[in-house]
Length: 348
Ligand SMILES: Nc1ncnc2c1ncn2[C@@H]1O[C@H](COP(=O)(O)OP(=O)(O)OP(=O)(O)O)[C@@H](O)[C@H]1O
Image (cartoon, rainbow, N blue to C red):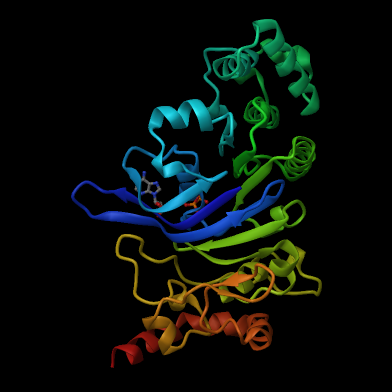
C-alpha cells in the first residue's frame, strides 16, 4: 500500500548549502502491518515521516523519488488534493508531543469533532458520539471530552492524539515517538492499545522510535535508518535475532534487554555523518569496526538476503563473524583510534 522509491529529502540552509536529511530511501509497507522505524537522533526518521504526510518544515522538500500510496504518487498531488484527499482521511500522524498537536484554545472533543466534520458529512451530534466512542476505546473517560488540552495529563493527551489520528479510519497512521516523554508503564500500555486498534481497523502503522526494545514487542517489521538511509529492513524476528548490518548489531548491544544472553551494554562510539556534505562510501564506515577500504570509497547497494531482508553493507554476507565480533566490547572500543588510521590509509 505504501512504496517509497529512492526518496530524497533536503532542507535548504540560507546560503549555507542544504541538509541531505533523507538520502535515497526505498522501502515498502503492506496493508495491516506495523513498521518500526528506528535509528539514533538525526538519522532522518521524522523527516521521512513528514515527507510522506507532507508536513515538512518550510525549508524542506523532496527533490527526488516517488512516494506511492495505493498506486498514486503522492509527490504529484497538489497541496489542496493532499489536504482534502489524503491527510487525516488516508494517512494520519501522531506527533512527538501531543500537547503541541492540540490547539490550547479549544476543547479536545471540539477539535476531534471538527476534524471529523471537515472531512465527512456528518452531524455535530454524530461526530461527538464518535469522539466519545474513540475516547472509550483509548481508555479515556468520555466525560472528559469537554476538557481543554492543558487539563489532560501527558499520557491522556497522547491517547487523545491517537483518538484524533484514528477519527477518520485512516489506512496508514504515522506515530512519531508517540510515547517518549511518558513513563515506561504508560508507554507500554499506549503502544499495546495502538496495536489493538490497528488490528481492529486494519490499518498500517509506521512507528518511529530510537529505542529498538520499544518496537520489538509490537512491530511486524523494522527498518533501521542511519545517516538518511535505510541500512537494514526485515521482519522483527530477523532484525532482533539475525541482523547483518554492523549498525544494527551495535544498536542491539545498546539495548541488551532484547538479547537472550547476559551481555554488557555497549554504545557505538563516534557521531553521525555530516548531512550537509555526506561522505563518500558507506556513511557508517567511520564508526564501523569492520570497515574496509571499499566501505570508505563505495556506497553499498541494497542486497536482499531472503524473504524481504534487505541490507546495505559490503560485508553483510559475513554475518557469523560480524555477530561474534560485535558482541565484544573491545571491538567497539578499538574504534576510537582505528577509523582515523583507516582513513589515512585510504588517502594514501
Ligand atoms: N527544518 C530543518 N532545517 C534544517 N535541518 C533540519 C530541519 N529539520 C531537521 N533537520 C536536520 O535533518 C536531520 C534529520 O533530522 P530528523 O529530525 O529527521 O531525524 P530523526 O532521526 O527523526 O531524529 P530525532 O529522533 O531526534 O527526532 C538532522 O540532521 C536534523 O538536524
